[in-house]
Length: 272
Image (cartoon, rainbow, N blue to C red; front, side):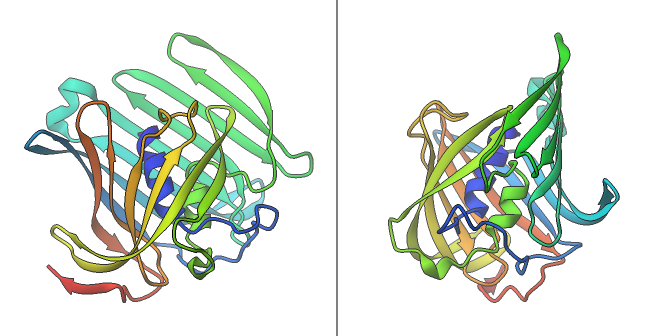
C-alpha cells in the first residue's frame, strides 16, 4: 500500500512546483465529498489479475481546535487473495483547507499480519515533525524530524499537486518533490511528456497529460524504477491510468469510479 501511494502520488502530483519556496496554494481542484476508486492489477506474461483496490476520499473535520480537511486513502486486497497476503491499510492526512499544508498524518496498516502505526504532527513554527511510531515486534518510540519548506506526507502531496498550473512546464522538464516518509525526507522527480488520448477499460476515453516518474536511487523504490501515468487534461486533474515495472511483471492502476468532482469531467471524450 505504501508503495502504491507513492505510485499514485507521482501520478497525481504531475504538476510540480516551479518554485519550492512558494508552495502555499489555494485549493481549486477538488471539494469535500470527492471520491476516487482505483483497481490494482498485476500482470505476468499473458496473465492479468485484479488483486486489490484503493479509495481516496475528502471530508471535513476538526483537528487541534481548527477546521481542516481529512484526506483519506484506504487500500485492500480482494478477499480471494487474502490467503496469500492480506492488506488492510488506512492513510490519513489532515490539512489546512486554505493552503493544503499537512497538520497531522496517520498511517495505520496491516500487511500480512505485520502492523504499523505512524503519526506525524507538523510544527511550522519550528519546521519540525513530531513522530510516534509503533510496529509489530518493535517497541513504541517517539522522534523528531526537521523538514524543509514544501514538504508533504504521501497523502497531502497528492491533493496539493492537483492545484498547480500545468501550463508552466516544458516537455521533458525534470520536476523535484520532497515527502516525509518512514521518518525521513525523500526526494522524487518526474517529467512531463505531453498530451495523449488514453482508453480506460470500463470507464471511457480521456484527453490526458502524460508523465513519467522515478524515485531517486536509495529511496523507497529502487533507483530507475520508472513509472508512466496519465492525468485528465481538465480542471479536476485526476489520474486515470498508471503502470510500473516491478521485479517480476508489471503493476497497473486504473480509475474505475469517481464521484463528487468539483468540475465536469470535460476530458472524457467517450463513456464506455
